[in-house]
Length: 632
Image (cartoon, rainbow, N blue to C red; front, side, top):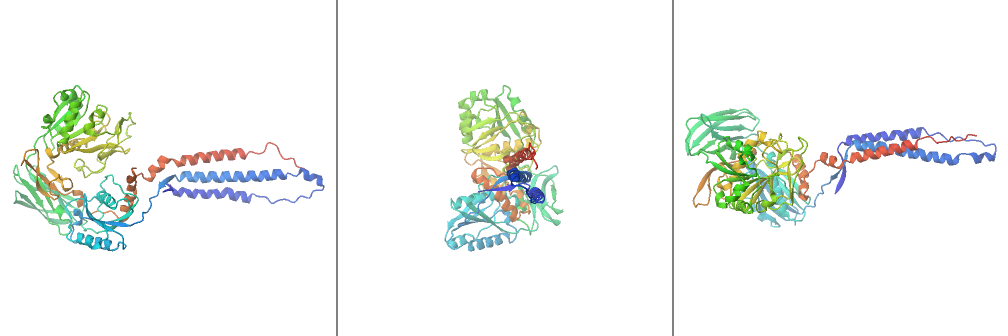
């Protein structure tokens, strides 16, 4: 369904000016004058036909003037065709219960369960009801059924977990559970603001979404950022509430209490607490605080004291001098950031001479910057390396022939390269700040990056992690066997963009390097949302199998997502507005705001053109007659 909307509807008041020519026409009308004719012969000279023509012309002039004014008012109001979202007829109902750790304040989750029970009880008789729980992922506990008692029993014993909030995961899973029939989703949630994590989601028009709001705590303390410092170990405690909070932080190393430090933090502020003293070279450290009113999962932070292992990467270029093609990557990886990186470089031709999956096993990740001279056998070796658990970054610029990498990249419908764009035309926007690569960045961290050329890869399979500001994918992740492939749609050599010159480049390269390692060398610090398979989804020090050798294990520190610690929430109206904007994703079209829709349609230009045409016609029609009427 479609409807006419206006970007600036206040200008429609200008249509009232159209009443002015109508009033002037009515006021200017002269009464008919009675004329006594002395002779019948004079009737032959009476201008009756001329009078009728003059009246018709006056009415046409009036219509043209009124229409011109109305069209000008319409043009200034900036009309556009808006897609009206139909309200589906609800039948089956799915209750989605938020179990993220922002639901763990005292009494909060018990209230959420009670609201879920009420939502199930309000489902009309004869309508099936289902149940799912969600945090950063969704789990369907019951598909729509008429057995209400069975669904209600599933609510017993539920507890909040340690994951973050993802409304996208909940709504996508609920829509899939409802199937092709119309239905309704009832979200029981605290409306955590960070729950919209910028991921593309599909909310079909046939699915109605309502919210049962659960209140949250008035305050919350969280601890995180545990790291080595010059004098010992440091942790950051943040006060998310509106009043000053005091307390004590406890440091435990290897299970032994090593220090207690007091803190006093103003509202909305954070404080770095330093536990001075010698720090063992290996082991694990834990910092704990007490918070009786806030969330419990973020009261503890874990960190490994073991030194990081070197991370070996291979960069393959198409240039004769590989160090030139990988210059900015090499410089970024040489900067120490609590991780020792080693980047080996080689040309595609030399790499092809000795490439094999066995040779690549010594590398934690590979970066493909050029394919000139790359043989099919070398491309196959890269595909085997990825399938066995390796990580590969493909920089999709004019140095890379994507058609030679179908075993690794799949088969995009087409790849085209833009010509030189005007400076400042395109930027970069992160799509999912919860992803391990983008987790350290805030929204807008790449706002200063400008692109002059990009690669447009149509139908590129995978998960979009970042987009160019025109909506095309910029960074895409693909899963291939046990490994992963990242595809970047521009260069990393300061030719097509200024990303290598921006402050965000260094941490971005470091995050990509760690992520490419995957299970070969996992990140030492993970959040619960992104732990590998086999690792419990809870904070703590965990063991993860690494490599193919039986019993070869690696330790990692798992913490909760710090964004979930915020107590700021959306209103129900704000949530519904986001849902309305995201419904367009279900039909394959990116959500477009009213200003974009109006700019794309340009209806005001058509209205202006027609108004000008009417005014020209009015000017021609309003010219005085060529010959004067003869008066008796």
